[in-house]
Amino acid sequence: MHVIQWPQGVKDAADFFARAGQATGAADFEALLKAAAPQPEPEREGAGARPPLGAGDACQITMTPTGFVAVYAGRRYECQAIEQPNPARLKATVKAVAPTGGGGCGSHFHIDTVDFYLSRHRRVFIGEVARLLREKVEVIEADMNRLIGQLEAYAQKRAENTQTTIESTIKNPLTGTLTTQVNTVHGPTAVFQTTTRPDIDAETRSRFIITSVDESPEQTRAILEAQRNRHTLEGLRRKKLHEAIIKRHHAFQRLLKPLPVVNPFEPLLSYAEDRLAVRRDNPKYLNLILAVTFLHQMQRPVKHDAETGQDYLETTLTDIAIANQLATALFGQTLDELSRPSRELLKLIRKMVDGLEKADRQRGAKIMVGGGANIAYAQLLLGHRSLRTTQVYTRVSVPEIKVTHAETHPRKAEPSPQQVETANAPLESLPMKMRAPYRYKQ
Image 1 (cartoon, rainbow, N blue to C red):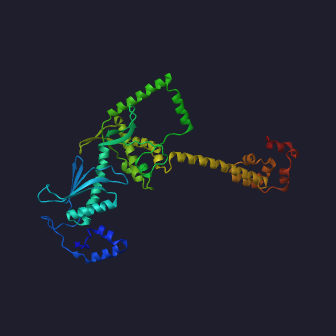
Image 2: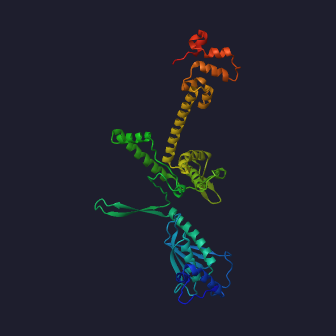
Image 3: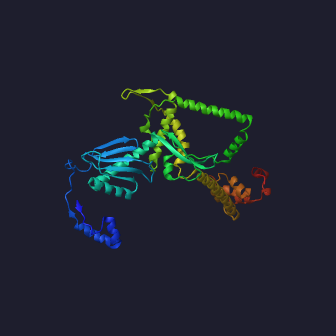
């Protein structure tokens, strides 16, 4: 350990740079570092020589009503007010307590609310804790890395197994004032969100199964028809039937037993590996198979594991087949980089372009043939199997088709001048037996 002798009136490095200025502060600070006097590291009372970092560092986690306490080789961190993490923030209030010989009374500690995903927050907190505990910065950095993992696991566990609280602002129907309504859902919970935005950010897309409303005219007509028949006698009957179906499903769900599901075929299943997002998509597919098995538990034998003493359900190939059929509809849009409205618009554009391209080819073929080009080239351009089809689109006369057929047919020899003259002759000048096969309506 080296001790820096600050100039008179300077408290720390931040104060030094504020007084010296950015231009000359770096050079002066480097001079102070070179002049720093080495000092032996003070040993903690009763601690003895500390082993190298990572060598036998014990980790003890104790849950508390408001969070947890993590102890790493005697270094104690009390964590509370842990917020639900998101890709940009992991916030918690952490109290680092210095060990003392006399117990909790009079203990030294440093407490702060830290966003562990911000490097400057971590850097400041690590510096303060290292000074408090008289440890190397590297040791405290290692503690923070382990603490981040514990905080993420705790927050995720709490979100899944405890409850979800949703606050929304509503208008009081009696007074007209805005009030905050708090809805608490006890877990395990499943999150369902709706949005009118056509584009969903990639982070949200990778964590959810995305589906969209059918915006086709056929679906709109069906909805309007159902709305117009809602208050008829038939509509009343459908409403009663609808309520009965929901009631039956609720009753069925209450009959389901919380049995674990085992999938013996899981190691044999494969999934696409061309994108990083499949790391989250693959568990969705595997859980879909487990859900299918779970819902069919009354049609599956309950097995027993003698080693663990637990009953379980086992996935069948039929369950996997059902999941594969569902996965096409469920994951198709989730894996698609375009939203459903964008995908439908792209299909319409492609259909329009194909139609324009076909019209352009037909127009070009007519121009070619009208300019004297061989109709066989027009046939290749339009992709027709028959010259008669090409004739319909280019309005070419029968004698011209006969000449082209004779010239381009692979099994025909080169026509004689007499054959060419006969082919080019007007239809009325040909004998009736030669004229009949080529009659057609104009």
